[in-house]
Length: 111
Length: 110
Image (cartoon, rainbow over all chains, first blue to last red; front, side, top):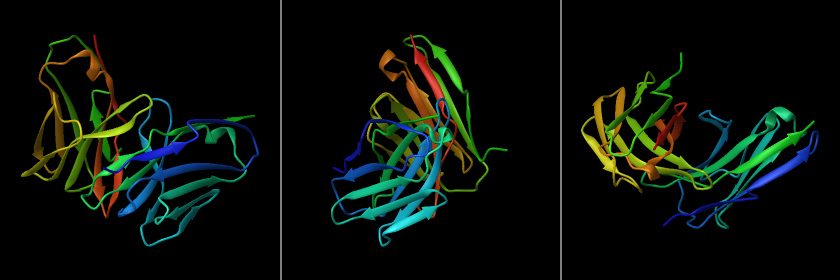
């Protein structure tokens, strides 16, 4: 059974810092991996999607990497801003077309 | 207009009541999903549907049922609500292996 773990569970950083969020998964047989952002009381916004054949994806200040063989992904946020404060969720898509989510990392960026 | 909408957005109900959560989408996607989110547990899959005639149980389907009334509509029902079904419920669609989520319904069962 696929399990996804995110570390740390919560993170507080001063504005301007670069930071890394970690995601690990137990079964390397994945179709893709997706990073989401969730604001309080809101739905999920897709940030980056990495296909299993890809190593990384970039969007603005965000960079996500994927090492399928070791079951790891990282989300790198450059020059963090208070508006980046949210919960970040990692999810892997199985070959049965199901998403398996981690519990999330709660990020707070202090101004 | 939002592509995936959920109604109601918030609901408080009592133990034993029947409740239906509705999801509509304008994206034209065949695949639709229902998840619940509990603090510290991430999202877990309740039911999913690959088309109107194809409905499948997810990880935590006990106590829930679904109806796919049309390509655009996928409803989740709690036949007899219980307090441990208090959670945030999300509907999602899927296309090209990417999922798109609705805003969520916060359900409280007293």
